[in-house]
Amino acid sequence: MSLGRGIVVRSCGIAVPDKVLTNDDLAARLDTSDAWITERTGIRERHIGGTTSSLAAEAGQLALDRAGVAAADIDMLVLATTTPDAMVPSTASTVQELLGIPGGAFDINAACSGFVYGLAVSAGLAATGTDRILLVGAETLSRITDWDDRKIAVLVGDGAGAVVVEAVEGPGNLLSHNLHSDGSLRHLLYCDHGGYLYMDGQEIFRKAVRVVVESAKQALDDAGVGIDEITMLIPHQANLRIIQAACQRLGIPEERTAIVIDRYGNTSSASIPLALDHALQTGRVNDGDLLLLTGFGGGMSWASAVLRWGA
Ligand code: UT7
Image (cartoon, rainbow, N blue to C red; front, side, top):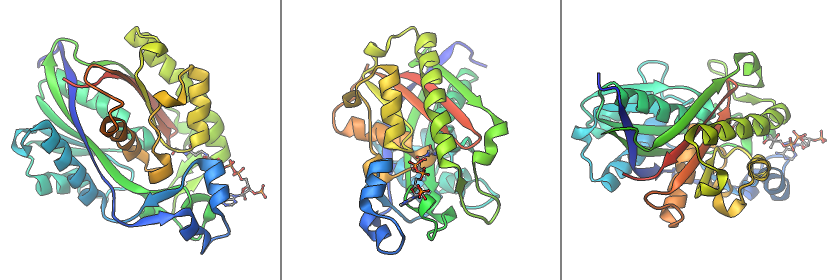
């Protein structure tokens, strides 16, 4: 046991399938239009294909390369996903073999909040003695989508994002986190065994804005930082209008918000690291910057964290 240790996040890496599906591609076979999808969701295209494990491994390898860390030096693989390759074993087991990671490996499912839940799990692992963790959010939502259902088909995308997390002595850079779930709302977003994704979009929309704002404010308060000190808000990417409503209520301008929903659609637990990576690659996040991460989705689950970027 090494209580009194915190975490730093060293690097990020992502992977998306090559195949791109535009709004016009969908409009060619469904009763929908580019205008409807763009106006109601902010999505313009999404990447489709691959397996959750292959995308997770590709993103994980890139994160390792960028951190200059060998797979052999990772002690634990934590994989957030709602679309595992199989019921058993965990998708993390496959990724572990693909990457050659020697330590433990397991999946977590907190739907679109999975990546923030994974950060909290990583902090707990670090506090109790794990030195290096590869945290991945990876999804192939296209596999549980009814492509004849315009209500869902226009929303989803596939992809993965990963970060290398390291334990450090002292409080570390995860300044606060909160995790929530209200299981009485699980009927709003679910997928039964062998079935397709169902979502009560309007109801989730209404609740999402409220809980995101509440939990983001709680994370700021617990970290003892004001919204003006946040360099970048990194929200789950479910709908541009949800992001805009949250930004407005939190008092953070859209310029300080990572938005990638236009290019990737909703990728559930992959969406926060995909957005984080875009902010990093476009030079909008640098070492020492404060980030506010916030996710919400099936469960209904929601979670927020304040993270200082870099080692
Ligand atoms: O990942 C975490 C959880 N998910 C979310 O947070 C998603 C939250 N919800 C949403 O993003 C939005 O509710 C949606 C994008 C899913 C839907 O947007 P909306 O503005 O709430 O539309 P709506 O469901 O109220 O539907 C408006 C109209 C309906 O037609 P009528 O009844 O007004 O004639 C729908 O049948 O739009 C129709 N519609 C469509 N039309 C064209 C629904 N889907 C489509 C479509 N193309 N793809």
